[in-house]
Length: 83
Image 1 (spheres, rainbow, N blue to C red):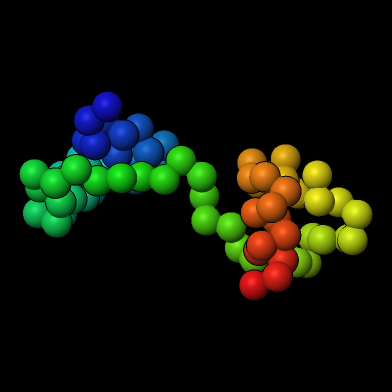
Image 2 (cartoon, rainbow, N blue to C red):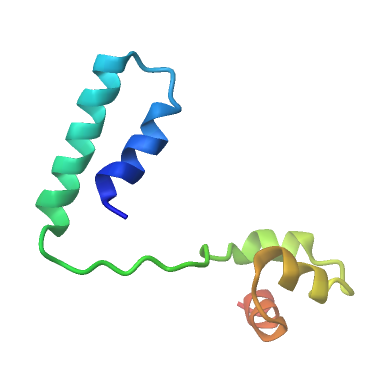
């Protein structure tokens, strides 16, 4: 999917006026093209895990629940708890 279509979907949900939305979309697309034009960019499908938040949610017996919530395996939960 083209980046400008993704940006358009996100920005159109904002409270900005139509002209302001179009201007913002153009600015974001231009900035991305300037920064990454011609490059292949990898976007990780999993969000970065906040180890501190994970430790706050850890009760001592909820490894499976945390793994499911954050869509990671048990070993990754333990690794983040021990960071």
